[in-house]
Length: 63
Image (cartoon, rainbow, N blue to C red; front, side, top):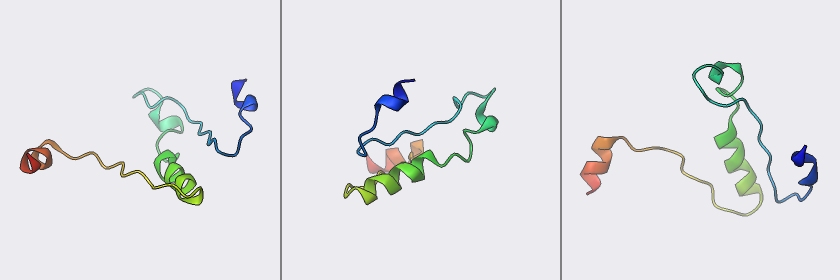
């Protein structure tokens, strides 16, 4: 598997099932990929990501 080739600690490998409706409850929900990514970024001196998606009404107010 290609994962074994990524040995640099600058890489974060996250694994979970595809979030399709058929498999989302088999491990994708609750995998905490977004929070784990932010933890990794902060630990490596980088800025975390705001993953929040604004709803349409919030976008229209800003425009």
